[in-house]
Image 1 (tube, rainbow, N blue to C red):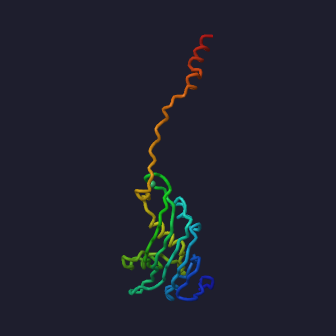
Image 2 (cartoon, protein in one colour; image 1 turned 120 degrees about the horizontal axis):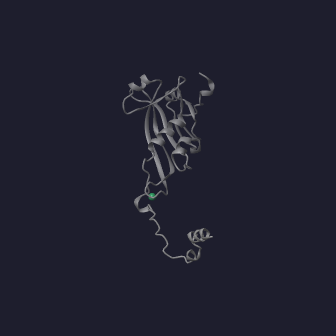
Image 3 (tube, helix red, strand yellow; image 1 turned 90 degrees about the horizontal axis):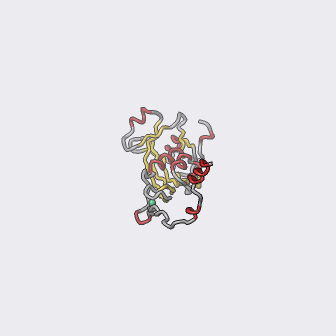
Length: 187
Ligand SMILES: [Zn+2]
């Protein structure tokens, strides 16, 4: 195993500002590692593309473990806040997003098929590495509402403004282009 892939394990619970991106998932399962940390949402381009803006970090509380059937699992939650376009009034609406998940960490499709249904499979590469940012970004994307709207009381549907009925005299004084054309033809 290459050294660079090993995260120094300080304690079972690591609270730090930034969640590591690529981790040795098999090893973290064995030590039952927990992380309470954030991902800078600016690093998550698929999330940025899916919403109007996302300035809040994605706050994660996750734990690597084995379940009673010895499956490698990643459980936890992540939450953030995004701005989307209200589908009723087309104005921006701030939406809190929260996702709870229980993922089964597998090495191939065969293992994925063996997982109980409650576990959503996530495939590790041959070195048991997992891109945590990508995995958690998926969970946030799945938790986005497909039809975002303001709460009823805050939604301001803009009525079409009635056209101004005030007449403008300047129109009348302007020469009529057909008159001009008629004069030209007479010459
Ligand atoms: Zn609205």
